[in-house]
Amino acid sequence: MEFNNSYELLIELRKKDLLKSKPKYWWPNVGTFEVVIGAILTQNTKWKNVEKAIEKLKTENGELKIEEIASFKPSFLAELIKPAGFYNQKAKRLIVLSKNILRDFGDFESFKENVTRKWLLEQKGVGFETADSILCYGCSREVMVVDAYTRRLLKKRGYEFDSYNEMREWCERGIEENWDKLAIIYENDLNLCFARFHGKIVEFMKNG
Ligand code: 39A
Image (cartoon, rainbow, N blue to C red; front, side, top):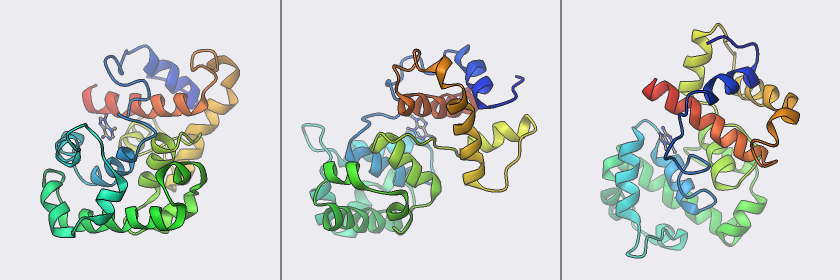
C-alpha cells in the first residue's frame, strides 16, 4: 500500500470493503451516551469484551441511562462491567464522569452540543483517544480519532509522529485538503468521513 497523504490512504482502504455489515458510522449507536461508556470501557481491552459489558448495562428496552449510571454504587457497576477488565477503576471513572456531565451540562443532549475537548481532557481517565472518540462518535464533531492501530499502520509505511495530536492533524489534513473529491461520497458530512476512516483503519489492522 503506497500513499503520500491520508487522502491516498483512505482511497486505498476504500478498495477493501472493510466496513461491510458494520453500522453507518462504524461505532454502534452514535450520538448516544452509550458511546461515552464504550470509549471508557474499551481502554486496555478488546472490543468484544466491551460489547459484553454494555449488554449487561442496558435496561430491558435496550437503553443506557446516564442518570442511572450516575446513581450506581461503584461496587455494583464494577460487577456489571467485569468483562471489560480494570472494572473497579472503570466503574469509579464512569460514575464520576456521568455525575460531572449532569452537573456541568444538565443532560446528555446539552453535553453533545456544548462539550469541549478541554473539558473532556480534564476528566479523570480521559486521554486524547478517549476524548476524540467521544467527540467524533458521541457528539458528531469533525474530529478524527487516531489510535495504536493508526500509529502501527503509519509507522509500517514510514510515517512517524512525535505526538498524538501531530498524527491526528496529519490524518485530518489530507482529508480536508481533498474534501472536494470526498464530499459527494460522504454525503457532505466530514464527521461521517472521519468516523468511517478511523473504523477502516481499525478493521484493516485487526483483520487484514
Ligand atoms: N477497537 C474498537 C472496535 N473494534 C470498535 N469496533 C470494533 C466496532 N469500536 C467501536 C471501538 N474500538
